[in-house]
Image 1 (cartoon, one colour):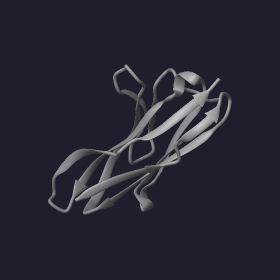
Image 2 (cartoon, helix red, strand yellow):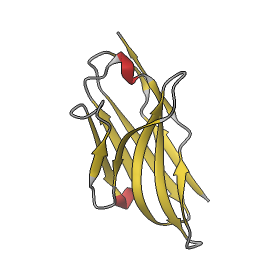
Image 3 (tube, one colour):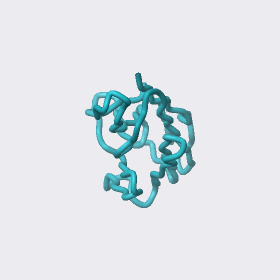
Image 4 (tube, one colour):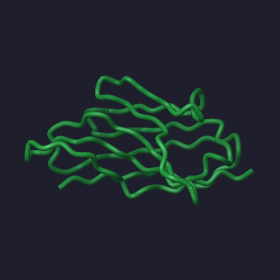
Length: 120
């Protein structure tokens, strides 16, 4: 069984920073792409950023230049450094990872979500 556990969310003023972390644990052989998604009230879940195992990154236009995704393969952990936060960034942030397990199968896994609230 695999679990993704997120941490680092909270309340911050506009212009502030937060750092999210997500660690995968369980019967893991290898992790391919990892990423962060978010869902604001009344909106669909959207991609924020992704990173491959070889550290190739991709960002939503709305966060380019403000957010940085990174990962530590040895720790099965992905991070999201969020700077210059705006009220529009308020959402539940979800970690996602495509994981190969000891059953020799690959599938996407999701974390439980962490709330980020940016006050104006």
